Amino acid sequence: MRYQKSFSGISIANRSVEEMKRIGVPDVQANLWGRELSAFLPNVESGQTLTAIYAPKLGTTFYFEGKQIIAQIPGSEFSKAFFGIWLDPKTSAPKLRTELLGQACPPPLFNETC
Image (cartoon, rainbow, N blue to C red):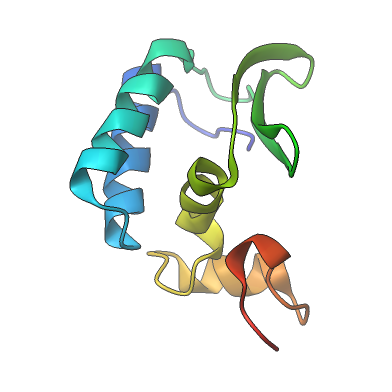
């Protein structure tokens, strides 16, 4: 994601927790992941990027500015919750979800049938 405004890492983590809860992640789990996110997410300035990549055997790897690895969270449950912020059918941004998915099926991580 390329940010168009400046945000603190804490505010990004807090918003991620809110959105995870919105798609059905239990409060306790979302809060645990939020604490983990707030421990490594940097403050971002307008124009900077944070990238998250899911790999089935590795989990989710986070990069700052495309090259610096800032964290890796193993497992698919976090990945499903985190990427679900934009890709889950219950996302708060359904138009963005449609644009991201285009005419394709959601990634297998979401186990939806087409």
